[in-house]
Image 1 (cartoon, helix red, strand yellow):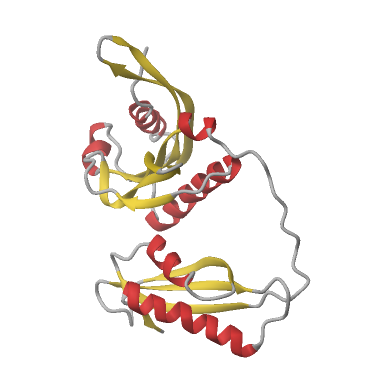
Image 2 (spheres, rainbow, N blue to C red):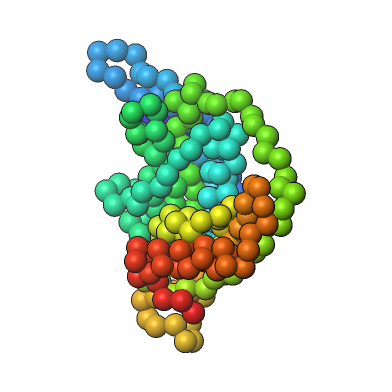
Length: 244
């Protein structure tokens, strides 16, 4: 049959498997058919993948985000996320639109996050479902398959940890953009999220490991400290962060 979306089938499969497999990862890659007035449906390749039976929402989101990263890296596409606030099928505080730029146009190519409570209940799912719904047609047709190689630096790439407290509503994407304001930042890795004793209500503590480096020299201690200050100052201004 001609499905306009893979999501209902995905949620149905999650519900059918949940009684005997309480938690698992599921995916489907298939075609969807979008209705057109006075014409045959428009055919598109679509991907839905994720996990059901979620007990740790943040860990599940990181896992699903890694799936999205793998797809986008494979096709050589850059993307950004924007909080989803309009689509009632998605959880309003735990979902985002996936946007890709095609020339001068930026388009929504999918969504990532948690299904809304009403959607889960409609399929009899008792625990959260975290997944990606991604339209692959435009992405694949404009994929950048040319691969480039970056030589491993012969100079040291020191790592430094920073821990900050931010408002609960602050997104990972917002924090990454702020940290990147520091010079010489080569990689940013989230290593811990903490809520509880010592952290004010409505806030969370995040620890990131920053990898720094320069392509042509060993960074001095002063340059490293200056780069960290730049990141921390950007976090304070952009995200209302407090250094722990």
